[in-house]
Image (tube, rainbow, N blue to C red; front, side, top):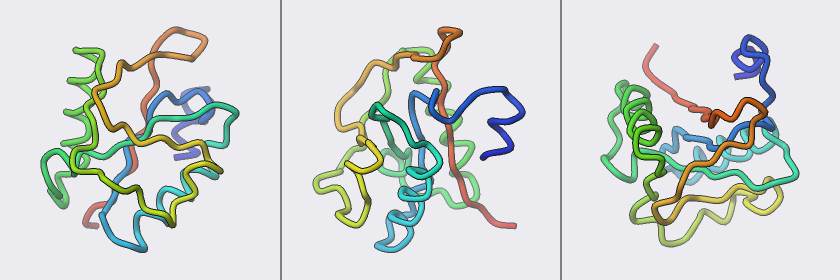
Length: 127
């Protein structure tokens, strides 16, 4: 992820939304979210989500599903909510890293200098 930002000339602090892999496991979700929180340290909150809550875990095809989600988000201007999220995992340091799960349809806004919304996607797959 660091290399991707270096190649674009952008800073992780410019990201407007984080699409997490979010395996739904007690250990996996905090490990991913807290690692991402360290990478995206910021003085403002950042929205986070995962397509898995909307359509399930698609294993190796979860990354393309996330891409489709964000294609639709950019078309509509609305980030879909994380459905069925009732209680955020207490092992994730939500407040420390200013991570906020999207729990209702939310307009995507840009805070980058070029006016384009910046989304980061994490994904794990086979191989």
